[in-house]
Image 1 (cartoon, rainbow, N blue to C red):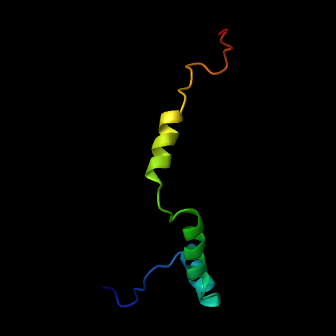
Image 2: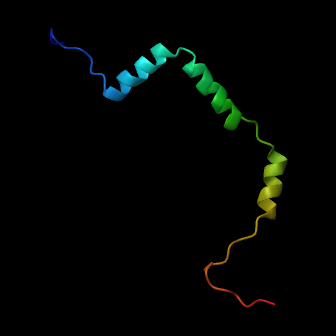
Image 3: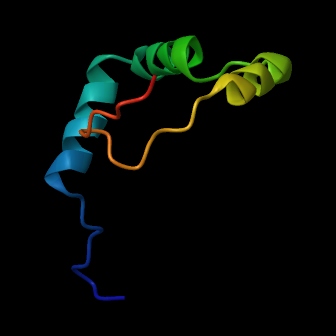
Length: 68
Protein backbone atom coordinates (compact mmCIF):
# COMPACT_ATOMS: atom_id res chain seq x y z
CA UNK A 1 0.00 0.00 0.00
CA UNK A 2 1.25 3.41 -0.94
CA UNK A 3 2.20 5.82 1.86
CA UNK A 4 -0.13 8.59 0.66
CA UNK A 5 -3.02 6.24 -0.18
CA UNK A 6 -6.42 7.01 1.28
CA UNK A 7 -9.70 5.25 0.54
CA UNK A 8 -11.84 6.92 -2.11
CA UNK A 9 -15.24 8.19 -1.04
CA UNK A 10 -17.66 9.34 -3.74
CA UNK A 11 -19.71 12.51 -3.47
CA UNK A 12 -22.85 10.45 -2.93
CA UNK A 13 -21.15 8.47 -0.14
CA UNK A 14 -19.98 11.66 1.54
CA UNK A 15 -23.48 13.11 1.29
CA UNK A 16 -25.04 10.02 2.87
CA UNK A 17 -22.45 9.97 5.67
CA UNK A 18 -23.09 13.66 6.38
CA UNK A 19 -26.86 13.13 6.30
CA UNK A 20 -26.64 10.24 8.77
CA UNK A 21 -24.39 12.32 11.04
CA UNK A 22 -26.87 15.21 11.03
CA UNK A 23 -29.92 12.97 11.54
CA UNK A 24 -29.04 9.82 13.51
CA UNK A 25 -32.64 8.59 13.54
CA UNK A 26 -32.74 8.39 9.73
CA UNK A 27 -32.00 4.69 9.46
CA UNK A 28 -34.68 3.78 12.03
CA UNK A 29 -37.21 5.92 10.15
CA UNK A 30 -36.29 4.21 6.88
CA UNK A 31 -36.78 0.79 8.44
CA UNK A 32 -40.17 1.84 9.85
CA UNK A 33 -41.24 3.11 6.43
CA UNK A 34 -40.13 -0.09 4.78
CA UNK A 35 -42.08 -2.12 7.32
CA UNK A 36 -45.25 -0.21 6.41
CA UNK A 37 -45.10 -1.15 2.74
CA UNK A 38 -42.89 -4.18 2.21
CA UNK A 39 -42.31 -6.27 5.32
CA UNK A 40 -45.70 -7.95 5.47
CA UNK A 41 -46.79 -11.53 5.76
CA UNK A 42 -48.45 -13.01 2.71
CA UNK A 43 -51.98 -14.38 2.88
CA UNK A 44 -51.50 -17.47 0.72
CA UNK A 45 -55.21 -18.31 0.38
CA UNK A 46 -56.08 -14.76 -0.78
CA UNK A 47 -53.19 -14.87 -3.23
CA UNK A 48 -54.41 -18.22 -4.61
CA UNK A 49 -57.96 -16.83 -4.96
CA UNK A 50 -56.62 -13.82 -6.84
CA UNK A 51 -54.67 -16.03 -9.24
CA UNK A 52 -57.71 -18.25 -9.91
CA UNK A 53 -59.94 -15.20 -10.56
CA UNK A 54 -57.59 -13.68 -13.09
CA UNK A 55 -58.93 -13.40 -16.65
CA UNK A 56 -56.39 -13.89 -19.45
CA UNK A 57 -55.85 -10.90 -21.71
CA UNK A 58 -56.64 -11.20 -25.41
CA UNK A 59 -53.80 -11.10 -27.91
CA UNK A 60 -54.45 -7.67 -29.37
CA UNK A 61 -56.00 -5.34 -26.83
CA UNK A 62 -56.79 -2.45 -29.21
CA UNK A 63 -59.03 -4.52 -31.47
CA UNK A 64 -62.75 -4.47 -30.61
CA UNK A 65 -63.86 -8.08 -30.66
CA UNK A 66 -67.46 -8.54 -31.78
CA UNK A 67 -68.51 -11.05 -29.19
CA UNK A 68 -72.14 -11.65 -28.31
